[in-house]
Image (cartoon, rainbow, N blue to C red):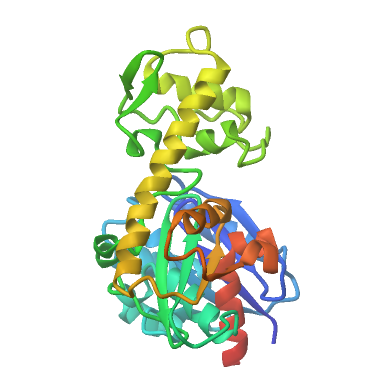
Length: 339
């Protein structure tokens, strides 16, 4: 039986067949929840040889739903449209359940994708030993810092809230995080300039300007709907200082981006240190995944107690596509093992 793994996020839907083929599509569920079933059908059509779905999700947090339980049940209903076979739904208890069972325990289904990824990392022998390891997954919106002991997730929290409190979840990523959530002010000429508390620019613009993310003129998933190019990123970022391209040069914009990238890295490093301290920093292996793997590797290189650990980067070991859709790849492989 061929299984398709799906990771239904609030801004992206990711799919993987477990053998290396992946797709990631932007979809703002909070704007168009009624289109979810058709979006899933379009994505599934790209994998015609798969006949079973294994699912995890985070989109239940979208504010088009009054509660997370409502969101989980809505997403399960949409997944069932045109799909007669039973879904396999991952839970934070570390097992798959049927869609009907998932409707009865929505809080164990909500935001369980990190748990699936960590479980797969532990079970599929990516680690060199069964002792303490660390998984760092940096995506477009969030960062997960997940300790593993004896090849199993060993987090303090299981929900978004408890993981935020412990530092295991940071709502900071490489594309969608508003710049005003990174810093309150930036160095500008002979002083500092406060930033506008407005969605003029996101971290995508920072990493476009620094050359960490390649330009894509067809990508309009930006703060102002203009292309994901360096010139457009310059326009967006300088508006955070309530200016425009006539007032701030491109080179000055790059300097501001560099400062903001440093601040984001320092804040993520603080969360990493909180998690590492609980284990005395004694990690034999660190597994890196997500579209922000480049940033995760930088965090590891900067951390005095992780520099000697064996670093396993999914984008290098498998492919950038698998690293970006790692949670979908994980549920596909875990479901294949179950079958």
